[in-house]
Length: 273
Image (cartoon, rainbow, N blue to C red; front, side):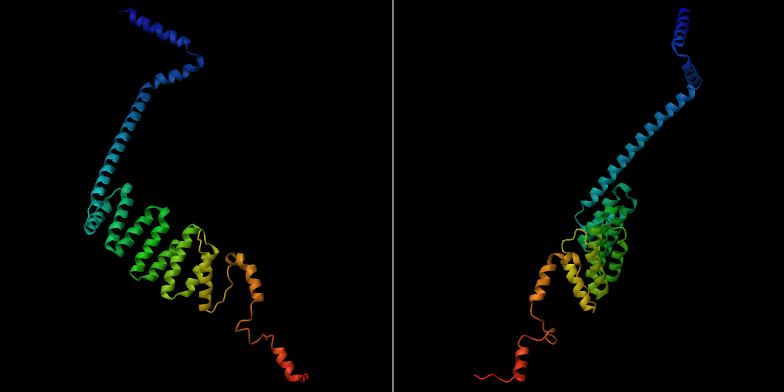
């Protein structure tokens, strides 16, 4: 029985003799604070287990919420479906909020409930900045369907700062359309001018060049066509303008080729046959 402690002591002695001298302070530190180190290690293990349990519970709750949402979406009657979804939206977790409001939008669209369509798009716009332009157009369309054109234009204009060129061009197209419905041709002109200056990926820039010219004439403000839309046809247009006969408006100031002949006939005597 007494041989075992002696063997342990000799083993520790041999280990200590094999440890380098510079490593002795580290070993002493570990020995002195072994209890604290053990407690910290156990706490880390407990924290990891607690986080795993929390994540598991959150995933379980999310799965339950998704199943609940799926049950509501499967309701065939849009009015009942919309009522259930609107009651669920305030308590729905963030992970499914976007899906809930898209489902509300779908039900409201089936019912053609423009106020609820507007509300759904306004929530969707707040969840995801990547669909800001689409959501803004949806809000404006819902207001326009209620003939709230001024409010729709205001919503569209407020969304312009920070948008990409393509999105901004699409927003301005809608503003121009609504402004024309209200007779605000000055706003139509400013939108057309901005679209021509920054068309983005639009392929119908020439339409807006012509629209700008038409509205300018209507307002009594003649403006030159945008060079981007006329560069390909600049040379043919110049050649045509030189070869073309004078327009009716120019006829009053530009004499015709026959005028000098008739004038000379009245001033000079006729020659004998």
